[in-house]
Length: 199
Image (cartoon, rainbow, N blue to C red):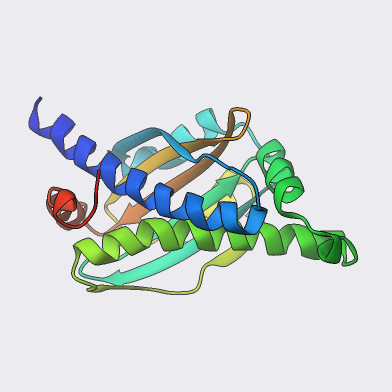
């Protein structure tokens, strides 16, 4: 295995462990089994992020959750809910009490909850690996097309990017991407994931 492939393999383990933690929390609120499986993960030049997202997500207006983090390395992440995936998640998690509320508020509330769970799982693993030298803000709910979502948090301080997808019930997908000041600290820390977690 070459160095790049080995680095990506370690990074995949970080996300897989994070998704396992997210899955447990998600199943608790859904009260039913939901499997979250890392489907794809790529390290790409940041300049290619928009074109790759457009080719993978042929969507107009979509919902997303955005997270800003700082510390040992800084960056932002977004989790995107393709329309059909969002509908399924809402159906899985919606309750009788929630059905009494305004539907738009219900939709936003459920997707925000899912986004918080995803970020708590993944960022929790990253924070542990960095000896808790990363802090992150409360995720924000956003709506827009891919270009708008990217431009809303574009910064010259970010030099590297990750893009990936998560498969869940009935082959539905969620997409996520990270923009960071440098990938080197994360790649270095991911090599010691087995010291902290079962993989």
